[in-house]
Amino acid sequence: MLSIQSISKSYKKQQVLQNVSFDAAPGECIGLLGPNGCGKSTLLHILSGTDTPDSGTILFDGKNLLKNPSLQSTKIGYVAQNNPLFPDMTAMDHLKLWYSATEYSIEDDLKDGFLSILKIEPFLHKKAKALSGGMQKRLSIACALASRPTLLLLDEPDAALDLVCKEDIREYIRLYCAQGNTVLLATHEEADFDLCSKLILLKDGHARTLAADTPVKEIIEYLS
Ligand SMILES: Nc1ncnc2c1ncn2[C@@H]1O[C@H](COP(=O)(O)OP(=O)(O)OP(=O)(O)O)[C@@H](O)[C@H]1O
Image (cartoon, rainbow, N blue to C red; front, side, top):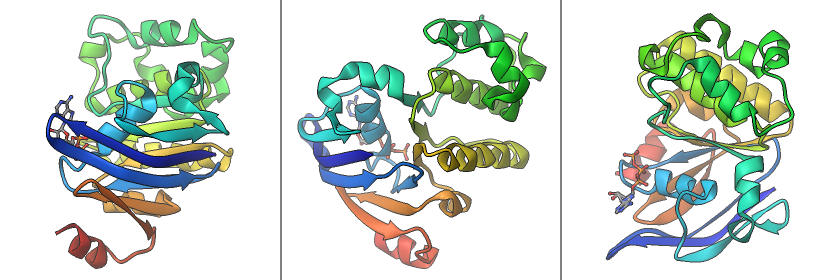
């Protein structure tokens, strides 16, 4: 269970997040929406440990996440918007690097685990710089999943992907949540709302919780 409690964050005089609070239960996919610059990535950075809040608490399975950074490396998978891969390393080199800190086997996962679902095999021996945007995204997700995190943070995974790749990734998110894991999904894509149990709208620093089936017209009215 993830519980985000009164998280606030400013950059100099700009207040980006103001007392943002919400919970995410095992099995839930929660959509994070809002206009460009509303703080979606900032919140995901804080959850992944790449940034810190000015105030507030985050409980993860009852533990204070901000005081237990080891939880962030083992229990939380973070897929940044811009696929931070090493250009001259192959997909296989990336997997070896991420798996080296785990007890799991790349071969097993390629055979019938998430690496086969994400269709990594066909480009295993290509360098990252030679991968398409969709392949890079699949690889970034695979690296984030190597340690078997129970919370996955996805920052606009659909951006610039083809329809098949988007649907493959959505299919994987459904499966991952059905296994009792949690996803926080920053998105601008209406089609992603179907995956979500609820939506968190960020605007002017504040968070508002909406049902996932809230009509898009209503969401747009709130955001504009
Ligand atoms: N390290 C930083 N230093 C200063 N300002 C920052 C920093 N990171 C983010 N910001 C500012 O915080 C605000 C929120 O940025 P953030 O990237 O979280 O927005 P977002 O909701 O993810 O946007 P988008 O939908 O465009 O991806 C923006 O105004 C941004 O310029």
